[in-house]
Image (cartoon, rainbow, N blue to C red; front, top):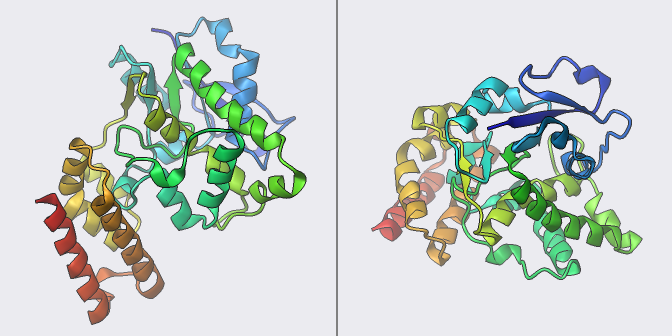
Length: 301
């Protein structure tokens, strides 16, 4: 099958960051710094560039695809061709995050406080019956924090209808409400809330629309451990990943599961605030950690 993946070029200085298996998508004249990839994606789809290549599957990825996924474009396209029959294929550059957060929105609020309120306001403004608090667990089958996906035209059409309903609604908001989405979000680099909201729409769409067959790129446990950024994350993946995988296989999405992940987030905050090593946690923190361990195993029984 014909797969065409385009890679965004939004500035001159990133010209050397392109994979030879991808096609450059030049948007330097309209870099969309506040909106980022979602704006490029809308333009890309409207232009219909993939039609020139008679592509059955197509995608649009960022210049950091190789750096984040640790995969070449050739390897990604080969994996797609080796697994025919799906509507969409995606690779999550942060696969370990599914063991630390309930879903993409809870993870977003953890790192960008204020994200949920803005997202719920946007869904309501677009007259969509979507509330972030009611969205289910994101397992490996629906988890993605970027635009690293490739799909057929049917999937693209439905997904872009979903996204455009939201962007159009945002464009119609009063100026004071629009400003909330373009306010600077808590982040290690300068960024507004806008891209952090829309990079979670792929997972949200998969949670809402069950009519498509989508395949996530698989990761072995040893690879997951290399993606962890500190000792606490490695401890969670090493000791509990199999248990959490069982939850996901059983489609657990209840209050008890949410409670466990809320506790995991509390432990991460405690760890990041007080120490760079698990061994340095205080006795009080160790007690809370032990309670969490017991809680997880209790609800998995």
